[in-house]
Image (cartoon, rainbow, N blue to C red):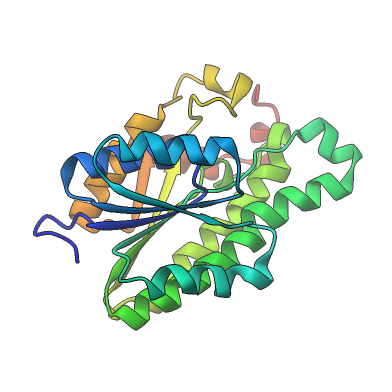
Amino acid sequence: MKDAFGLPQSLLVLGGTSEIALATARRLIARRTRTVWLAGRPSPGLERAAESLRALGADVRTVAFDALDSEAHETVLGKVFAEGDIDLVLLAFGVPGDQAHDEREPSAAVRVAQTNYTGALSAGLVSARALQGQGHGSLVVLSSVAGERARRSDFIYGSSKAGLDAFAQGLGDALHGTGVHVMVVRPGSVRTAQTGEREESPLATTPEAVAAAIELGLRRRSETVWVPGTLRVVMTALRHLPRGMFRRLPF
């Protein structure tokens, strides 16, 4: 169960090598979290991530999970929930893709969409049903400001995040009053090993900053979290910008 401040004692990370997810896990372990499940494709990186969290004093277990294998999600995640209640599910997997390459190779674009949207939809629904069965818990979904309005430079990725964001919002509405809390997190560009040139954005943030925002959002039981917070105003303006003007923006 969560503590008096709304922070979890048990955590399931879908996307166990995500830098944002690991920063969040470290922060929560420093507070109250004692049991962590890292779900991801078996790899040395997943094992290193688990060891790094064990060194902080948590009971950390790994589970083989593939976002693209939606048929296995119910079985894989069902085994985790069968081990005991999960206070927080952090849906943190996703791929940025390569816009120029993916435009030329539709199969690559489909893989981005399947990972970021359909894989997340499947895992999110399975997790939500399990949390509802417990009668408590939070589902935190890592979305992106890229989903607010698709840019020419990354509209394939942006469209997949737009679908994920809409799904998570709707799921939160569907679960309202059930004891299950859904929170959508919309970071700007995050400086991680995956982001590459995106890290140069003037509104870029860090995994640690996103983790801090997630903790605060859990304490407040927020439904939407922007990181940094100023992005809410920026994206409100961009969302209403006439398309012709938006098309000429230098990104």
